[in-house]
Length: 301
Image 1 (cartoon, rainbow, N blue to C red):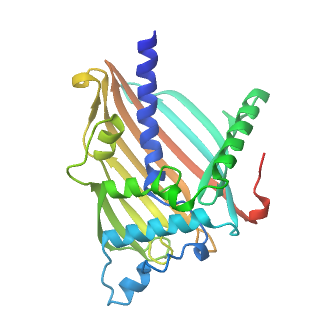
Image 2: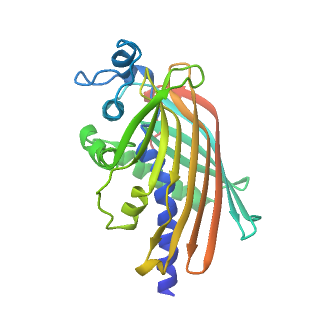
Image 3: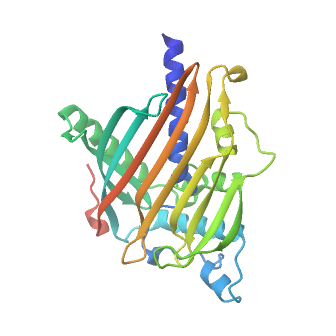
C-alpha cells in the first residue's frame, strides 16, 4: 500500500538522519599538516596553552573545526587514507533478543575529507555483478560530486562533514582537558540552541540531540564522539505515525603516525515506534588495515 511505503520511508529516513548526524557534527580525518587553520583563526593549542592552560571557548573550537573543514576540502596533494570497515546490524525483538543479523564489509577511502564506503561483501559473500555495477555507479557519482566544488560553499552546505548550518544550530561548552591515546584533547559538550524552528522531523530530531566531542587540541581532529537523544521525537499528527524513543552513538578514533584520527569503533542503538510496532536496532562498526596512499592513486571509475 502506498501509505505503508511512506511510513517505511519515514522510518528509514529517521534512522539515516541519526546515523549521518555524527558525520555532520565532526570533520573528517586528515593529515595534521593540512589541519592548520586559516590566518584569521587562532590555533586552539596556542590560544589555550599559551594562556596558562586556560580553556578556549566552545565557539573558538567550532571556528577551528570549520576552518579545518574548509582547508581540507581545498587540499589536493595530501595522502588519501583507506581502511576496511565491518558493519554488523542487529534487529531485536520486543524481548531484546536478536531477530535478524546483517553483516556488511566495506572498503573506505577518504578523499578531501569526505569518506566513500564501497560495499564489498554482504554476509561474507561477494557481491553479484549487478551489485558491483551499482557500487561502480555510486563511486562515479561520488567522484563527480567532489570535482570542482567550492570549498567554502561545501562547508556552508551539506557536502562538508561539518557545516555552518549544523554548527549554528548547537551551543557548545568546553568542559575540560582529557588525554585520548596520549594526545591532549578538549572535551566539548553540545546541545541545541533554544528558540530554533522545528518545522520538519529532521529539525525536531536535531533539536533533541545532545552529546560530547573530544577534539585533538593540536590538530582540531575528532578523537571521540558521543551523541544521544534527549527526549522522544514523534512524527505524524499528534504522534499517530510513531516516535523515535532512543538514540545513542559512541564513536572512538585512533591516531595515525602523521596525526590523522580515524574511527576504529562505532556503536549505535536505536529504538522507535511505527504505529503499534516497536523497532530496536543495534549497530557496530569496526575498522582495520589503515593505509595512506598518495593522492595520485585515488581511484576513479
